[in-house]
Image (cartoon, rainbow, N blue to C red; front, top):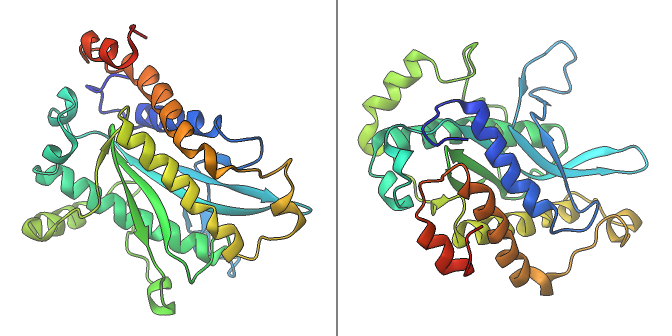
Length: 267
């Protein structure tokens, strides 16, 4: 991937690689990654074909019927260029209205994805659900819910055929420029703080399985779902190595001296 590319599909690959490397640090079965996870908006109505598609879903298929339960998801949008081409510090990109607007629109879409997940029984309704929202190589972890029934029935984003915000919505967002704020910490993929944020996101999401009554022999079976909290620190550092390794190629203009100072030898 080149950070100069505005191709959204390329960004999916980078985001998926980030989570795949974290997944390899867990034992088999701790969670699966579901690309383009289709969640029906109204699963109780067979004639309602509307769906929401998180770019990535993270969860488990619970035996004996392999029912899907998830612990979180991810929504990705293309980078804001040329601002992000030089990989500026995360907080500085939020000075741009275009970046804040991109996060705000993506968050509206992610909110609908969480609501659809609740309606499908994939996550509990009475819990806070975390979602990764990425714009190019930058991401936040945003919390949604709990939703009351009225909120759950309201669809916040109605996509046009391209899957992006329509012209009317874009105009409305522009008029609200001064009111758009991103309060969550923002991270750049390939940094230690980003690796730590992903580890915490994955660990915190595991509580949803218990809240959703996914408990018993299958949850406790060491073969399927082991997890050792004492390894968190080690996992954080190792995941950072993986992330930086895979980002060093795409973001090849990162000075080699930076990599040398971190690792003692170039990757």
